[in-house]
Amino acid sequence: MIRFYAPDIDCSPFLPESDSQHCCRVLRMQTGDEIEIIDGRGYLYRCRIVNAHSKRTEVETLERVALPPVWPCHITVAVAPTKHLDRMEWLVEKLVEIGVDRFVPVRCRRSERKDIKPERLERIAVAAMKQSLKATLPQIDATMPLSAFLDETRLAASQRFVGYCDADTPRQLLAKAYVPGSDVSILIGPEGDFEPGEIASALAAGFVPVTMGDNRLRTETAAMVACDTIHIINQFAGQ
Image 1: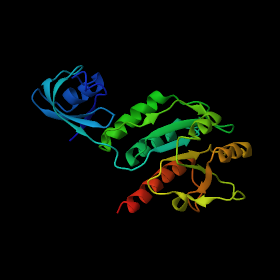
Image 2: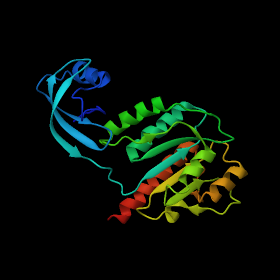
Image 3: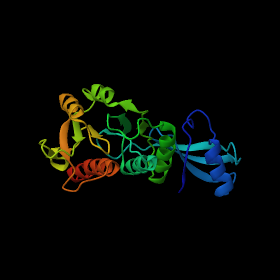
Image 4: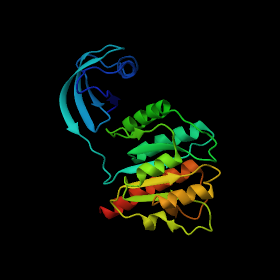
């Protein structure tokens, strides 16, 4: 069943205009039809359409069901935005499909793109949340300086990893370094990689240099592989 997104459904029994149009004009659903609505905070609402309207569809709630994330930890992925915005949009879509709790664009000295607005990424995250049958919308942050992210994560995550390409810096394989079930922050640098001073700051903040394997990966690919590695490890641990 197609799911609709209404963040205020718990206090306002209406679909937003965009979802109302999709419901009534595209899917041609009628008064009396039953639909599923998610609120982005972990709940699914089974509802019946009371008034099918292309701009303001009214519903009544039949059942409210908790759908918490299926992974056992909090996953934060912080990435220096790439020059081409479509790569970041692709990354957010895939991270949400795989499962992530927070996405943070970080500004580094070698960043090709210094800023990225969260509104477009949030819309992509909503679509990916609905498509992948999740009910929790990840937190999408505005771009912040790398130093600010390092400062706030010192006490926030039980494990912190930074992907780094310098072969002269001792690195661990992420799949071996991660402890199953642990909250984790993953930091991926820009296309030109971190400057030595930035890596020094990350190490001082408790980040462990890691590699995702022997292949050299693009920024967005490395972030996706790292997040998926965490999920695979937790899945095996839960068997």
